[in-house]
Image (tube, rainbow, N blue to C red; front, side, top):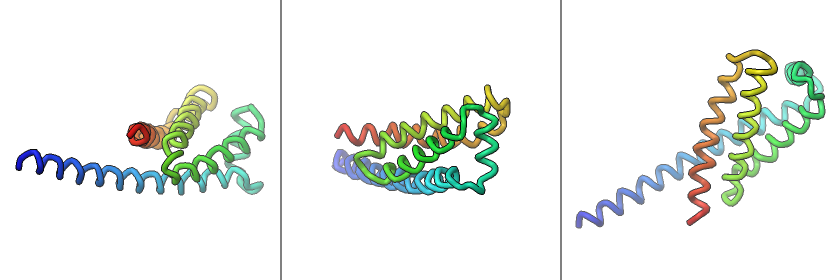
Length: 132
């Protein structure tokens, strides 16, 4: 009887964790869909100026926006969610490094760091889920 209760509790926690991950993935998808799409706007002066300060060129703004939009969609597909989260985590790591070393604005690195932590958790857990 004791073993049966352990299995029931484990299954319940797995369901809670899975539901929590899906909620996080949906929220992340919305954030990155919005953020990525806003990089394409010719009226998005913030993004134009930010990528001008980075110094790589405006093509990089389009590349980053495309990557964010594509990965936002892929986050919502079970088979690709781990890869999408890992790609977005790499993007956020790049954003953190850019804010610290190129833009010299460490405080602005907090925002991508927050998303990096969540993306790493999603990528890690979904990677384990794919192995089953």
